[in-house]
Length: 346
Image 1: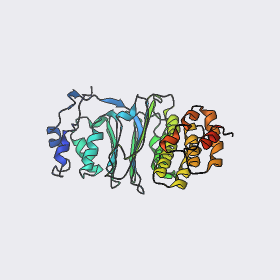
Image 2: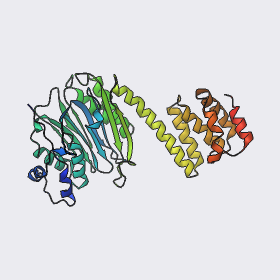
Image 3: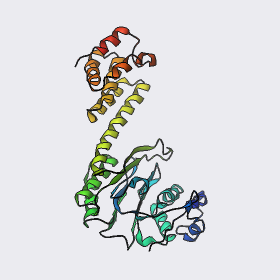
Image 4: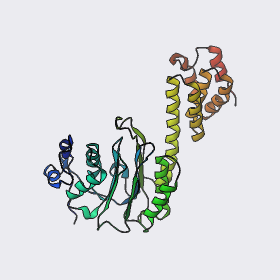
């Protein structure tokens, strides 16, 4: 029987300066309260496959994971801007995530961090953990009693890890997909998950997935340094659904960029961003509407009218909003213009 144990978060105060030597497990254990908010942690059996990575060009960090278990993103995947990323799974010790990030933020490498956490854990035989730090240093561990098929690999700036797989080839497929795929970090990690599933994935099937990408800028807080945070908690085909949401997320990021460019007075860039959003989400009437509103607001009325007509057809209530926009300065206060827009034809 596996006992329910935990690495405490209370170690963090000791890392204000790097006074605790690497691997000082006794000091970690001495601060181990085995509690969070007065309640014991509970081991969660997140048998799964995941990838942890750092993009050497952008400095971004990410984690992507899928499993046959509810809401995998709440326990397996951890990342902090400018610091690193962690995946903690198998018979999961969740504190490896937040505590690992705190230790790396205090200057410990991924290897030092993982070594210290393992030294303080009485059940490393069932743990599986992957980490990457701000220098691209990686560390990975799979306990001898993790459920087969299991595998792991520490590559250049990334790790892959899997347990309870249908086939033993999952890690090899993830490595190949990640290293050979072009695109940003989210795309490469997404492709790695798809490759793992194509090899059979979790022997139990599919249920939840998550993908997190954070900035490489340590000055950014998590709330404004998170580039993607996708979670599919319960779905028959979570990776396919996450692929769809990744496209939607890119579309909304393009819309946000358009809004930012409008604020900065960079109209041509704003129009380009809204156009990109519309291309990514051709059935999203909001992307179409704001593209049209930007064009009309900047005097490109004739170009805006077919887009307005298309948006009105998809969602008639946009017509009600049109008459309100002049008060916010988003359209000229021109009754003839408003009338022309409301009567737009495709």
